[in-house]
Length: 485
Figure 1 (cartoon, rainbow, N blue to C red):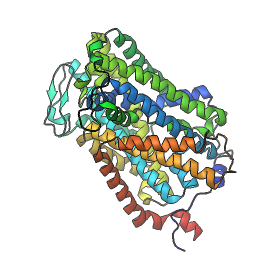
Figure 2: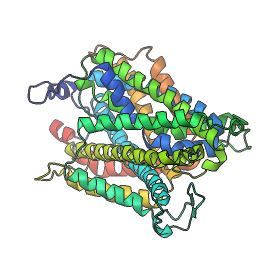
Figure 3: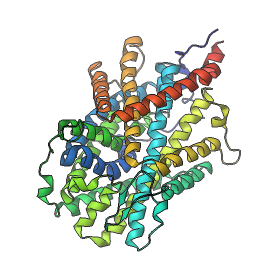
Figure 4: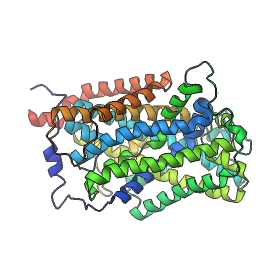
């Protein structure tokens, strides 16, 4: 029998696999815990790195409006994620959901697309991590060789005015990717207590920045609040605000981590929407205040190509004794985000390999450490290449367009399942279907169209490569099709 690219996994089998005593996870997460989980997953590199770039190149001080627009798109997509998580309360991802609801071909597209979210997301964070590290070392009087701290395509300006250009490779970014990948190979994962500490630490950094920076705002930096469009689409004006929303969308990536915790929620019907929307509301408020203070401390034009804008802005406050502590806290938060992204990426490819869609190489587990070590090594090299040589703004665009595309498919999937299987049990139902899924699709696609055309070319090339691999290998080795045969 010919391979069926629309073959679906049985939802009953997936759910049955997590209801036995051996596999059942304890339902211990309250709505408050889910909100905390979402906040911890959301606050990361997007806020501390891409906010400045979005303000300098696209929105100006109106980047605050960009954050609100991005949050609206996330809210629609988040409600759709919540329904999928209630239908398939398995600790998984959009790849698993789509395999069970929309079939293998769509699952492959989402799984392949998640590389843009996780792997390139980790590369983006690594570049920004490197920038903050250089700022910290510079404050201590330590200066690394300029050829080894930036990519050949970037010019870096430190807070003290030092300009670094003509680089060869961003070596600190490469090193942190290598170290974290090696930790993952050894099966090292942060404990729940450590994760809670990092959540508190990241929120504290944002609050300290807002509170101490507010009194040093220069109102002249807000004039004009919405800079006039230059005549080029996406350069200020409303089109710039929309493009800024697409860029800072990266700052909201991670809210879907709440939906994957449905299996451990005490009451997923109530807890999931509260966790997803609650974390989005809290983070949106913090983001708007943070970006308002940041663009008030420094004129938005000074953030061009600046991957550490928070440090640049905070330097204007005069709280020099807190500057180093702020940077150290941001570095710690970045490290946890990179670890989670690299972990998530390896698990997605591991799952795809287990399903036969990728070679067995990606599913090999280390005998001692019980981790997919070959996948970790592969992405250690893959991510470090991007982190070492690609500018942070380009990386951010690729992550944003890939994630927006995946969210659009999830919204479409919820609408499709309501039509095809309306009687299926759902612990949580997305309200106002098909309005919410349609709006989620429209907002995500609109934000995608606001990104530079180069981002679309790269997405098309990436998906084209994925299709070649699927039809050349995955479709012919699919285990679900072999079982049907």
